[in-house]
Length: 94
View 1 (spheres, one colour):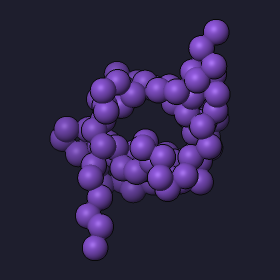
View 2 (cartoon, rainbow, N blue to C red; view 1 turned 45 degrees about the horizontal axis):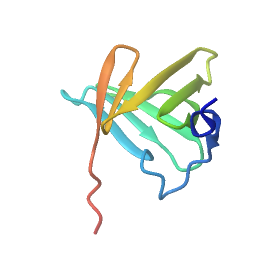
View 3 (cartoon, helix red, strand yellow; view 1 turned 90 degrees about the horizontal axis):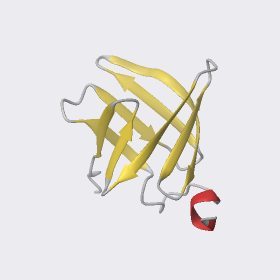
């Protein structure tokens, strides 16, 4: 049993996966918030989906507020989720 893979990581502002993840064309945007919630935008539709998430190792599980579930895997700094590939968007810190 891989203990790290089965341990839920409580997100925080310093967790490496917290932040904005976007598809190459910018159409899908997942904002993984430090409080364990996510906000997904699609095109011009902000907050198209919202819910909670948990991270175990390099695996993420999503529970949308409308009732559906999804998951994904972080591989080499890229999020593979529901047939999509999302890249971490570097935040402009001023």
